[in-house]
Image (tube, rainbow, N blue to C red; front, top):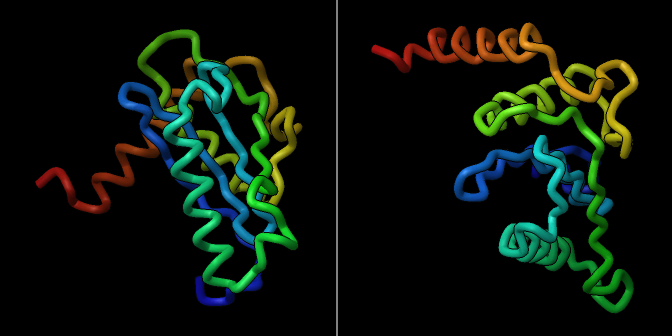
Length: 146
């Protein structure tokens, strides 16, 4: 981080071994926003939580923040009620859509009931296809396919 005191969200697309979900992390406030299109709790993936907590504790140590002041367990995990997928194959596209929605609004906080501007129980087929097309266009522009 260039400006270590500036608040930012870092996006971590995380694959649990067969499922994609999104973590949006504010390391300054030690907040992890957890967005899972299957609706699982982060306790479903204990290794993920240990990994991210360890990274944030290392970040804290690099910034010389005393654990006695902040406490080792002060990392806040927030499960966001995001749109849910209706099948077992679109999780990667949902994760990309969550990231795009958050970036489009430029906010440093994600409401627990998701953004009013994008709130819905499920994405429509058109909304999923839209992110698929954007991803394909991105890959073509990177010239990865040749």
